[in-house]
Length: 487
Image 1: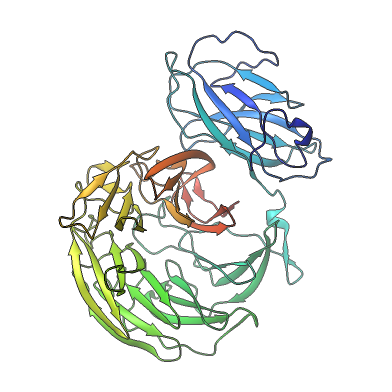
Image 2: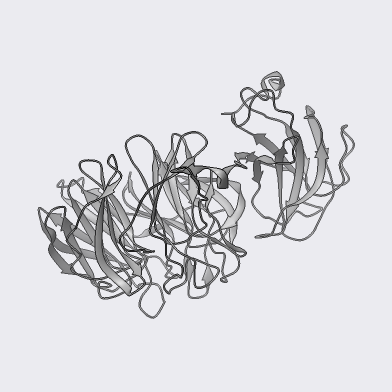
């Protein structure tokens, strides 16, 4: 929700919009002549995140890519116009935060890290301030304090009442969730995050702690939890959680093949489980609630961390599953995508598709309707990260990849989600293990364009949950460790 510059009387009741010209440390409360042409014009938007009576001050922040915020300006009131001018020649993000009288940060946001040079023309960016609930570790479950522990390899599933169920996870073997290996300190928690303030409730405990599993909504208000790394290694175990009763089913039939870092597609009471790490790396199987595994097929190539999406072929109405990208057992991008056909309870190999060059893995990807085909953005190649955006029309006589505008930053292993026709790519790895992105790109799949804002914290991996016309980010890793929940 945006408001105009003349709506400052509603600043705490509805939204805040002001104009900043910012790229450094010197601050003034008037409107001086800029000391050079290098500037970023920020439109700050902060939806209704605090009570109208709150006494807040605005702080300007700055920091290097993946680094911590440094406060470089503080304002006890919000002026109509605020200019902050000083040029720096190293990559940095600029941001803002709202702080209450007790010194607690209640909202925060940042731009994408870019070099701001003296001869840069003014450019405009929108900076969204996101609520930062200082009481997050103090919410209670069953009368006891419960913090949402930072984690990687968890899943997040939205149930009918809007509650987000966060399952499992662990501490990474490295500072990034994108590299292989089983996490340590595995969690068996099923946590429910609900309400405007994201209150946390311990719903139940899994029988087996796990990470890099998958979860899917099943009929009857159930969530199925499939595979993952356990203390005994890669697992084929399945657990079924009854959301309304907050109980686990006494037993559930396992998968045919043990696997972790896999992908799944849910369809009524059937779940198609595809690829991963472990014995199931080159296999796709159908699992049915109450029966277990009922059929499988061999993939053209083993792959972990693939992206899978169920689509309907407009030509004949067939149910197809796009299996996009992934890493080979040797850690290199898989050399082709593939398509599976779901015919009742039978999985059929439908064909392969050569991805664009250079080959990439851990990209954001989605099916598109117009034209019917696959969209891919970013990813990690054998020579580094890419910012490429490509798509292919699978109904055309010759299937060739078309290239569009680039992402705001070259990266792979971003969290991804869909809001209508928009594909969201949040964070990611920009190359090396410890170089994390703070960019969030919103990609319009209809016209193949992208807009970008900055995240409060650089991160990679994790989950995106759609909340109305916005998103919530859960889990992931940073160069400083792990993060938990960022609304």
